[in-house]
Length: 201
Image (cartoon, rainbow, N blue to C red; front, top):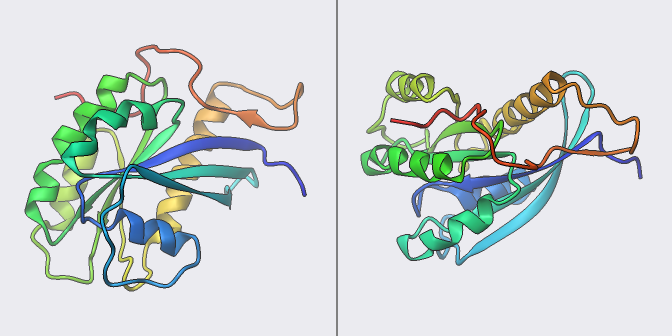
């Protein structure tokens, strides 16, 4: 089969119960399930998305556990990651309030050119967090914002496309080409201070 133009690892982060696994499975073409046991450690799938500039992007998408007891594993999941979907539940104020904690985790990893999409999930439920408040947080942290409903299968395609466009933009800004190999891997190679994830307080 044709090789992708870009390959990248991205991860889901956020509190336990916000719907990370449901979003991931929906993106993988599976039906919504009303009940899940919490993710233990991490799972991942592969997904291919075509960018607006016709780049074929292969994503390795990791679903990480949001429970505190797995917090020490986060640096391992972030290693060689190019971006993250930072997920909260619009019907759960605490999950929104905890976003700053997750931002600190991402900042601490100090990954170059890291792309973050803030995802407000469960828009099918009664809100505790309004869209404008979430968009304000995203602007403050230099993130893109997308709302989703895993139950109703809404916004997930837009979420994926948003991440892919950010990764392709980074690829093009760095003037990388595929002259020497068919596929360009845009995993971070070294630490530096450049980042599209401005999660600093």
